[in-house]
Length: 592
Image (cartoon, rainbow, N blue to C red; front, side, top):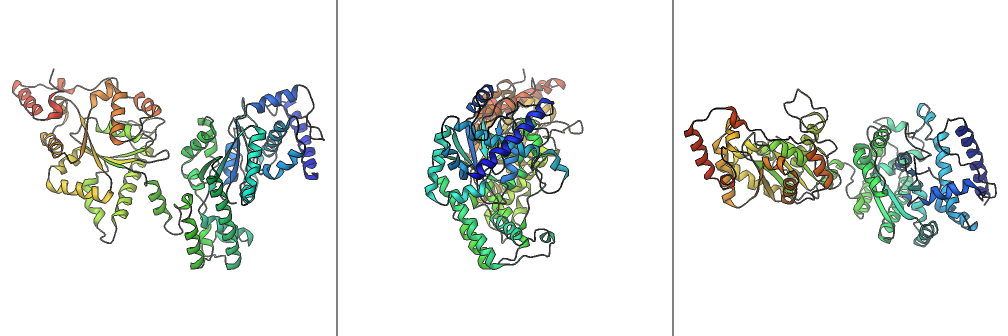
């Protein structure tokens, strides 16, 4: 009770300061400065304004997890959102009983006001203040954003106190407190579970307890204290059990957030957080928040001397929880990639003639949130190189194939013909602004390579067909082929190899592989229907946002290069004869 009164006095002083700042136009928000020492609001316009402000709040968000996981960073970033207020370590669950002792009118407003006031204090004088950016220690200031305040309304209020919340939930009886908070405040209660590699979590806690954090920067330093390390391991997995218990409880939504992904994929991670909290993910918020993120995660595991028994114990414990299964000590990249590619259901190749529109179709598909398609990785040409090491398993080859294709797609999205910096040095630009080129949103379901003419040429020979069947065996998933079709007269006028057409017809006659014919003309004249057909073929949802972004920059009409050269009647007849031999061409095309 005494600590609660002290807090109220501090809050009153703080809000008096904010009122003075507001009056001098240094702080552009309405002042909230009338909280009397007895913990009750005075009547009048301020109380009405506060009630109206907090009546718009829809969600109360709390954090769970182990210390040193990234809770402070994510809490500070969310506090910068114009519709979110999240202070640093108010510890609402522990203080809830104190609020309940003063239950009565205005309880909801008093609770939310207390969280709001602490957020303001930290944005002005604490570790989120702009002045801390030039000082020592950690700074969680997001310049130009809304830390400590809001723009027009507050939709989400929360409390970042992950470790204490997890500790409290080690006792299942304390779940009643969560239900009481949600029921009393009439707010939807959600949890953010921030996760870091357990080896780094445990190692960082040991280094801090031993006060050797700075010494650990040396690559030769190894902290050693077996007894203390065992205790920290016990404590860590007690918190893990709390998180798992909360998930199984089933009455509250829990979002797993991986700290290293917030750093490596800030846009996707922030979008997921905003979606979870049901707020808009504004571009300027994402841009400013990204500046706060470190260049790379801290891998403190290598600064600790582990016994083999401790490593084995941690691995065994990790394997009990689905949200930790992606981590390991030494082979983390391999486990991370295995986890990333675990949902891939289809592998896709392109076949057909050059200058038909394959590059455009592939670039559009690569912008889908569940598809990665590289441009001209040339997998079948490089296929033998994946079997140079006979000791490798097919799973390892599959991982390398997916990774190499994904890496090429990312490189093209960052620096190549699909990038936002694409310019006149590249003949064509295939950037889909706002799409997911080179990346995926949450699940990657389709991966593939666009190198149509070379793939088709190789499949004209028996070895190419053998490699294709071998590839399907290595990947363990169906291979589907996309054949982009253009009027043969236009193809020939640009570049044409009649052999490629016959190879595609041969593949269709085999009836072994699924082949989708996509007419490039249809992509321009009826894009929504064509994109829906492509998505259905590869087994992904055709999201409205994907369609809108993909169709925004499509050319207005197809190129009819057939009229740019002279044809003899004999040549026209010969082309028409060949068209009639191919089922996928004869009903679609003629010269005029």
